[in-house]
Image 1 (cartoon, rainbow, N blue to C red):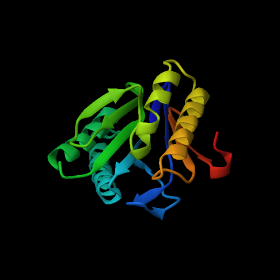
Image 2: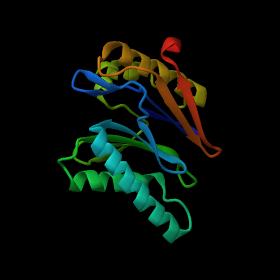
Image 3: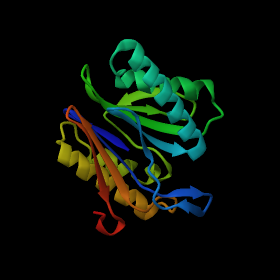
Image 4: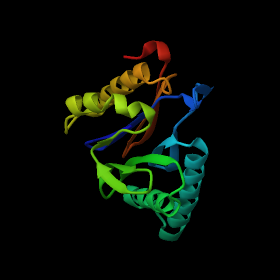
Length: 191
């Protein structure tokens, strides 16, 4: 999931990867860097989302070389959308979030099929169906960075407690003008 705050974004994900009911990896990192201040949260087929994020990282680097600066968050999200739209057979639900000097913190959802939607927060993956009510009730515009961190951590904790395909630890990425900060919440310290 990802949440925009005044000046940046907070992204978070659990670490469990499953193959049916089999837990294939308990400590995977589902938050992937695309460029310096733009990351994506991947859900769906791990192979599909890794391939899409690799392609977008390559295209974004090419755009950076051509322009002499990193592309905007919207441009990177549009690249994700375009690849997913042109390859509808992909099982890739992706949240793209980051910070750029033009528009600050932004969150975009690229759903299955490639539709692109900007939102103040976005949730995805198998655990998301368990926390829509929680997020609707507790999200408010104008939250501080630390309030967003707490919101994301509590929402993911609820999803992990209900969904058998979610679990492990929580990985957080905070992106703002100052750069990227990673945080880790171990399984025994969940809120």
